Picture (cartoon, rainbow, N blue to C red):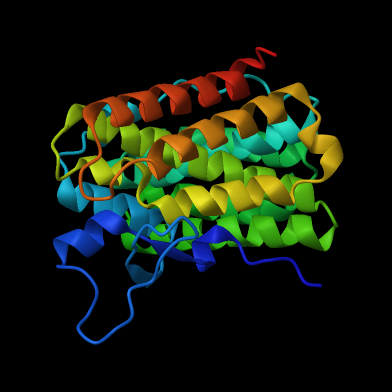
Length: 270
């Protein structure tokens, strides 16, 4: 059986945008999640598309969400893959801010982590090209390039049968994106903006599906198990929420839990 496509090529359902657009198109059946919550299917969304949506509906101050470089790439390949996913999410964040120097700095970290996973030389030409695009302010071309490079990296790992590492990169990427977005929502807290905190319950379901695709040995690792438990806590928090009116408390708890996951990944506290 072939591996499932990366999330950036899978459908992401964005409840908040659907509500802004007035619900399901006339005559269409309303799609639902397994728990019965309604959703609006809007086609394939990349991480860049996701942050575009947030920027269109909030006053996102992207530069304030930059973070210090991660630690030296660890010898634990699984943790390195999670951190690499977070760095790739930072590439999309920095693109939104249009900061060429920060982009080049982050790309150096991406390269270091790719090298740790044995993919540095294969991805070096792409990463160097991205740095030059940022330096030349070729932002439109750079957007397509960073979307493509994510897909190329995932494909390379799957071709060398490192499926767990591919899943962990996607997990790290989307958990970091949700941390970024939850920070924006906390700062712009209104009833209308709160559903954007997780983009959609479907995003959480896909993150859970990714986690469940990891091999059982990975599930037994303390750090991975802790992340899985945190994902379940966030999912339970939003499963009990009505899509139209999440509370400020739900948003705050979600943000705090996502920050906790990032700290576990960065510091390996367990």
